[in-house]
Image (tube, rainbow, N blue to C red; front, top):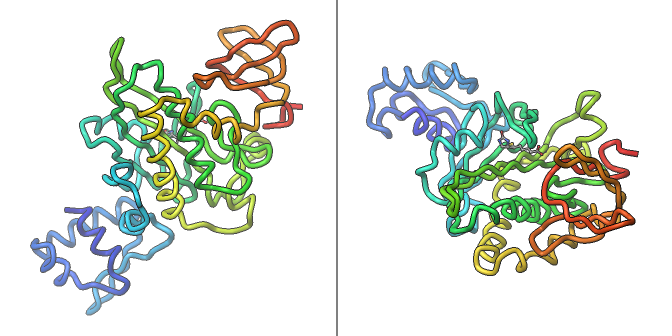
Length: 317
Ligand code: BTN
C-alpha cells in the first residue's frame, strides 16, 4: 500500500490531494496520512500544502516507471523492485529467491554493501546504481562465475566509450574502477538453485576519499556530467539479456571474443595472489572458460580466482 502511494506521488507532476489519493487507491484519508508519515520516516521528501495536497520533491529519486519504460527485455529486469534503503541488494534478492527469474532489486542506498573477497562496497545514497539480478539458470555450478563476465560485458556495452574490463569483472575507465560485480549462488553439487548477480556502478560520485581516490572513479568524475540513473539501469538490462541468452544456449564461447576485446588486462604485467602464493607475469590470453592465462616466463598458468593486480592500474606501479 505504501508503495502504491509512493508510485502515485511519483507519477503526479503536481500536488495531489489526500482525498484524490484515497479515492484512487480505495483507502481512507487517515490511512493515506499514516503511509505518508512512514514514507517521510524512510527519507522521502514529501511536501504538503494546505488545500493543494502532497508532492514528492524529486531530488533524483529513482523512478520505477521511468526505468521500466526504457526496458526492451523479455524477462530481465521486468519485475523491478526499487527500494529506498536496504542492507545489500544481493541479500534482498536472496530473501526473494522464490521470485521470478530476472527480477531486479535496486536500492537508493545500501547500509551493508558487499564487495568481492569479503570487502565492503561504498554505496552512498542516490549517487550510484546498486542493483542485483535474481537468475535461475539451468547450469552446472562451475559455470556460474561466467555470468559475472557476461554482466561485465553488458556494463561495458551500456556505458560505451572507454569502459573496459579488468579481469575478471571490474569495469574500469582508464586505470580506475567504475563498476564492481559480485555474483553469489545457492547450489547443490550438480545444480544451481539460484544466482544473485550484484552490480554497483559509481554514477554521480563527486569525489572519493584518499584511499579510494587512487582506485575508483565515477561517470561524473570522468565526464563532468550528472547522469539520470534509470537509462543506465535499463541499458545494462537491455544489453545483459541477449548476452545471457546466448551464453545459456552456446556457453561462454558465444561471448568469448567480445570479452577478450574489452579485457584491458591482456598484454599487461600482472601480480596474482591466489591461495596464499604470489606470481608475477604477463597476462597473455583468456581461457575458453574465462580464466586468465599468465605467462610467468617459465610456464603458462591459468588463473581462475584470486586477487589480480595489473601494472598501471589502481595505483600498482
Ligand atoms: C567488487 O568488489 O568489485 C564487487 C562490488 C559489488 C557491489 C554491488 S552493489 C549492488 C550489489 N549489492 C552488494 O552488496 N554488492 C553488489
